[in-house]
Length: 219
Image (cartoon, helix red, strand yellow):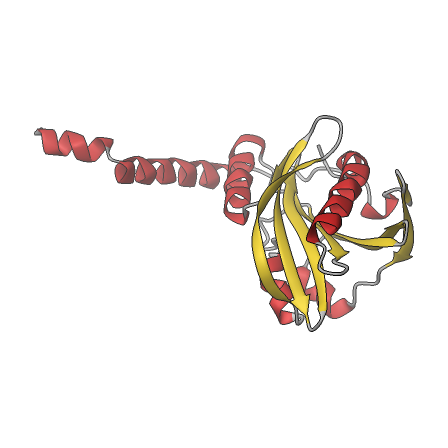
């Protein structure tokens, strides 16, 4: 076997193809076993008082939206602190083997009239020494602007990228025979185009509810 053949075998393309074959084999084997459906508490058991944030309104998710999302459990609430509002939305999926999966907010927001102005990923303090990788979007609808932070939560793992989230779901499927995950989204209005104040409020809100949410979602 010549050196060029050895070079091909060591190439990133060959390694990626090999990894894909191994993962496909693992997924096929895990699909033949009964899936582990973790037991978690209902999202409605999330505390009404979260630090200095207090629930102001329980949102209603209409049936059409429920049919589109196909989540096993949903939560939509408005919390307030010092006249600052923060909307919390959580869609929990106990299994993704039946074709159900989280819908990315970056695809849903334009359909509801919100236009992204800028986006990126940031790290957020989730409290108790936990750092979260989250997506950060600034969106507008007419004269209104809002800050959107969201991520995918699987067990103790918070992931911003939907591609990395899918990768870890595959790994959990092979190792633990589980595919459960949740989409967590926080929306805070931007007043006078002050993005920094909105970001600080959103981060403080996440720090207040995240430990409680971790106790509700399957570990």
